[in-house]
Image (cartoon, rainbow, N blue to C red):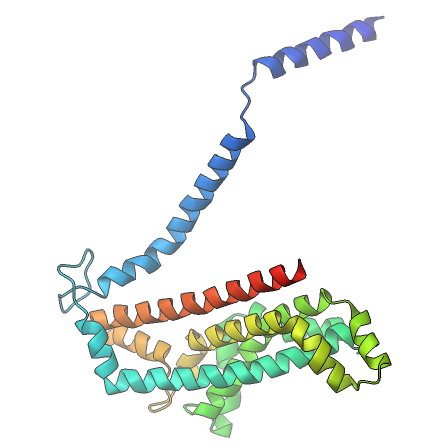
Length: 287
């Protein structure tokens, strides 16, 4: 009897508390969540966006807000031989890295996801090590290996080092794309007489093309924006745009640095927009 009275009293108390406590509609919750996410996004993007007006100031030094607007620092960037040499070196390295990392990462992903390799999980974890190990550790290790082989300060050394750093991005995107494809499609092609190479080229590759494209974009950006390893394996002639940026920040800080940073931001945004287009196209094709 006492337990029944206690349960009844507790139920009435909970009803009274729930009735008197304020409730929020789902619309208010969404507004609060979107507002908080927008504030975090603005906080993260603000330092990058401030660079753009700083590159347009007329003063021979970096200032914010800028006094007057001009494009002369962009013209100075494109007219400077050292800046152009570093830019073209970074572009050549990034393009070569994109091709090599995409080929290696795609084939490695196919072997890990669809193959029957012993220790495939360990191999996949090992291939993702460049994403986990700090770049400063990789930079020291690459320098110690490359220096005796005379691979520091030249194009070949940069292409090898950046390929090592970029392959994990390709493997992540391609592996995810492969896991969404039904293996029966490839088996059907093999049953119809196609070789494994033809089945991969005509059946598998068209279905994972968005993932391969996204991985290629990430590989390009990982190479073009990389700075830590560049400090250790750069030379007098073989110098990336990121290494040149940090040198000018130390010894010749002018709005050209902001102009170069703006160009790099715009290039990254364009390429990331391409990744988003590939993702939306893939999603639409699945539906």
